[in-house]
Every structure is written in C-alpha cells, then in structure tokens.
Image 1 (cartoon, rainbow, N blue to C red):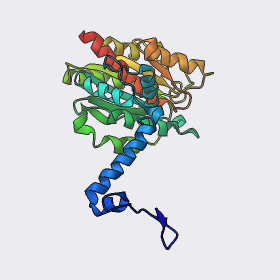
Image 2: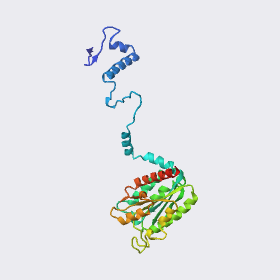
Image 3: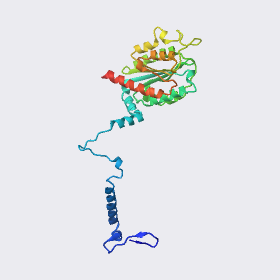
Image 4: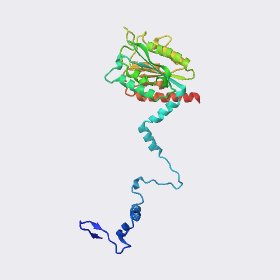
Length: 297
C-alpha cells in the first residue's frame, strides 16, 4: 500500500497473482466475491445481526408464540374498526334498521350537534352491505315527520343518502309523540315488505317533548302519558329501540325520558353534545349483530 499523487491510498501486490490489483484484473466477479467475504466477516464479528435488539429467537420446538398483550394494544389503538365493519356487513342479510332523527332548532348549537349527527349517520350507513335494509326519517315541529330515505335495500338508496343527510337544516320544536307514531307506521309497513328481517329503531333526540303552545313534558306532549304509549307499541312489534339522548349530565328529565323509551337499559345511550355519536353508532351495530346471532343460535 502506498500514497498516490493526490494523497489517496492504493494497494499493490507483491506479485501478479496477489494483492488487490490482481483482484481487479480478475474482473467484476472476483472483485464482488472478495467484497462479499469482507462484509460477511464483519457481519459475523458483529454477532451475526446488525440489529441485535430486534433479533428473532427461534424456540427449540420451532413453535412461535404470539404476544397477545401487544396485539390487544394494537387492536385498541385501531379501535377494531375494520373487524366491526366486517361483522356488521356479515349480519346485514337478517337485520333492518330505521332511524328517527331529531332535527329541531336546539340541534343547531355552538357545539354543532347537528353536524355530529350528520357525520355519524353517514359513517354508520357507509359500513352497511348492499343487502342491508335501512330507512331514515327526521322530525321537528315545523315539518312534522319527513322521510329522507324510504325503507329499502342499501344498494338501492346508498347514492341518495349523503345528499339527503347533508341537506338537513334544524328548526322547530320537539314533537316526540308524532315522531314515534310515524316510526311505528313505517315499521309496520317495513316488516310487511321484509318479513324475514329483525328490525331495530334508532331514535335520537336532544329535547324534551312539547306541542305548540304547550310546556315541555306536559301530559299532552309526553309519549309515556299516552294510552297506548307509542314507544311500547313499537316494542310490541318485536322491534328493539336504541335511544340516543343528547343531554347534559344535569338534565335528569331528558335522560330519564330517553332511558324509558329504550327497549332495555343497555340500548340507551347519552352524549352531552353529540361528540360520541359515531362511537355510539358503532356500539349499536355490534349489539344488533350480537342479538341476531343469539336468536339464530
């Protein structure tokens, strides 16, 4: 080895058969073979792994065990969304879901309850399969009850759902009795059209029932004071009511009302400003599928 004229280093061999220059003269295959030997030696001297902390140890019996705790952490981080969507699609052929949405003036607040509701409904319906049955209605005192999406197979209405939901503007009072009575009529017709399906109603509201000129929760406005109670009539159809309240923690009247409208304590939900609506809808989808599996088994 000696310095070249530019201050670098070059290798020289003692004879024509040795040294680095002879390797070069042997062509590329010889050179790369030499390079591989050098790198391999360095690799072995370094412990056989350039990243020893990540080295995978093969058990003596050749069987790998999965760290389930790590998988749980990963699953929680992902929210298990993909699995939930798959399960919801799988049970779509035997379920049917109608919605009655509160679009009264109080839904338009600084906390954007109406926007949270819109995004949640769109996310929920987008997880359906083409064979899902879905219908969407909304209510307020100005419009009464409006059918935004008639009860249909999802494949037949999926293109109109985003436009119908995004165009909703809240206004008017909380005509809860009218909403429940209309939901019952819709469900009777839907059960006739899809007799093989198990129906559920998702009822969303953020206000106490009232009628024009009346006070909140007056006997004339409270569905529980009616004979028959329209919520009980829906339950008697074999329909499960999932009620979602949007009330503050101190609003005991509203919370009690929505709990009473639900089929069971575990089908009642509440979110103070609608921020948890999307997660609530995901939970409902799983309960719907679980209930179907229980019945079929």
